[in-house]
Length: 235
Image 1 (spheres, rainbow, N blue to C red):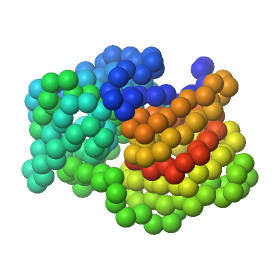
Image 2 (cartoon, helix red, strand yellow):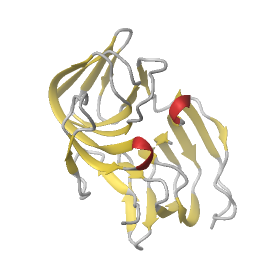
Image 3 (cartoon, rainbow, N blue to C red):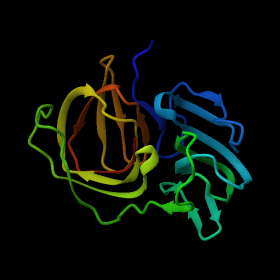
Image 4 (cartoon, rainbow, N blue to C red):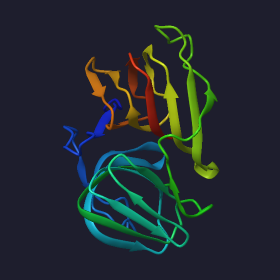
């Protein structure tokens, strides 16, 4: 069995990543033909969608975060209408009645929780880049190779039944040695850049506007020399 590893989903400008994707859908009620980079344990999936046109779903089957990289995507629920341009992100809660309109050439990264659980609070949630943040726990000193950074976060979407946490996080620069990643995590860099040292010894550069997915258990070290702010999806 191959060791899990971090995978780059999309560059800032929407140009294809060198990641090996597999075409397909996530299930019978999935409205999209996707390019899937990860589909594994705990019913989590990540990859990209390239689409245009309108898609309507009476009860969206997953709780899914999308980050637009090219084009424009409009999410229309019963209560809200969100226009997402490149760099914008939002969450579609499972069970939401939604219409999705993708302009020609649209591309977005996604992270979807596909567990077969009952819907909670339905709707769409915007992820504002500059939401207020509160101090959060820094990396363990056991793994740090630099002074302890100052970290902040804000969970903007929480699904208790699946332990899904989605929001914004920031940090001052720090270096951390390799350890198995403690959760599944999608990261989209709003600001800054990082280097992830992978289990095979290679280095994965993630720059402002890039989206990366790190599976639970994937060995990786973290190096940042500048302030970093990101959207996150954690489980």
